[in-house]
Length: 363
Image 1 (cartoon, helix red, strand yellow):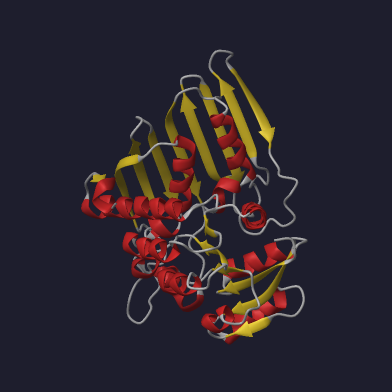
Image 2 (image 1 turned 135 degrees about the vertical axis):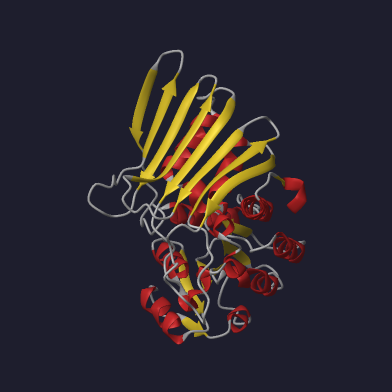
């Protein structure tokens, strides 16, 4: 495929708009259609897009329009399985589905079944692996900088969940729970870095402060705002997630540390925009034998728009388009999406039930 790739956006909320802005900055791609059931959201999407776009209230009309070569599914989490089944019924259509792939393992498997034999790239939006600092860390680890990896720690200290249309993201039944909705990104990073199978998980977490003063139709939100989660992998590696969502006053939002018998690699990404936050993406590489630590500021010259994810969702589109043009399968697969969701489900279960959960229980 050599001509301009025509994109349709299904769901014009915060992430849908970020995808519009990404595509606006890619030379050989254009937004041609946007679908959202809410008129104001469609108008927002149209205002952000470069050029004229067709607007649809029902995404199924967009799918039938013959106006798009690829779609981005950025609808609320609990709708992904139904929307994806419809999208995957259109032969030859390429699709990027936002994380999480779905809110349950069963719905992830529904999507995978619908994708069997589909003639098009099917990509899961786990873009954190493309953040410049994370990508450099992954490359350093794969090149042997830490030697035999056995210890991985990911810390995300950040702001609370943002408001969403209809406040759907305030309840576990819609999101799959915080460790599915937010943390599938980090579980995917763990899997990419460790390159082994997660076996079991233990954890502690809860809803400490956030959203407890909110009420929707008589219900108080039930989403977790802090947790410690530890996964054990088949190769003996341990991986920790340290999450706090009442930590706007942080110099760095994400900190990733990978350690082995030869050394340590760290990646640091910017914190929330406030006085004292560090705007740089930093990677540190430490060597035990030499007793030295080298520090680098990391960028990716391909990035034309940072968006809300430090340019990682822009790089994701470049990789998606490259796969389409080369006729190659997705780099971030439905199997990756399923596993990241399953890890979130297992972690939620471990905390709720106060026990170690084997991955085999959810897979």
